[in-house]
Image 1: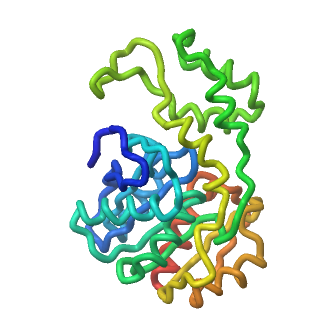
Image 2: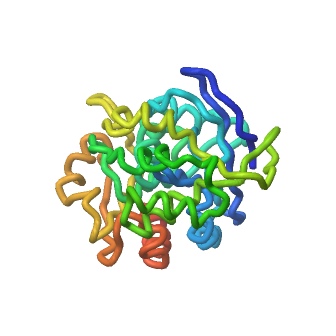
Length: 275
């Protein structure tokens, strides 16, 4: 990991933790979705390393990256830029899923010279209503009384019936740390739940404004069973991204890298060939 977790100041960029997933080709940087982390992209990222040098980042308040109170899209994008500077990376292909996709779009418009190819997984450049129930459910758990992960799942189940969603949220549960070392006694959330809850309205906004534009190649990948990217979203996206194309993975939901991993990897390679 590039950065150990630490507190960030309001309005200040942070250096993001990362996961190196291999490869010796041109750099591909992956940005995960809300409540996720670089870990969620490990398997797909290693597949992509057949063609790229793959680096998956943890966005602020997620994974092993620093916690900070603000989560505007300009700040999230600036974190990416600062991290690329730290790594000595100039121009990269950028793949973002959901929250990471919005951040990737913001970064491409802020620093178009640094993005060789923008790849966006199941999100559009528009506003969305963000469901507050996952973060509320996690905050409702008294972790002081939890001694096993199964107990945390039982408490989450009181608020969230969806087993797959609970298992996803529980990827953020870890043994407590002292001086950044896990003590093995009790549990804590890796993500900054309070910061995320305080910024849900901000995260729901469109990441772009009317004057934003990126003229490089852009490919959107939509889940056929997802409601996050509709056919009409492509026309709207071309206001910002004139070269935008859309690809539908018919059998996938929102999490394309899990639901349709092989199809997504093949589609990403094909899009790179056609860019």
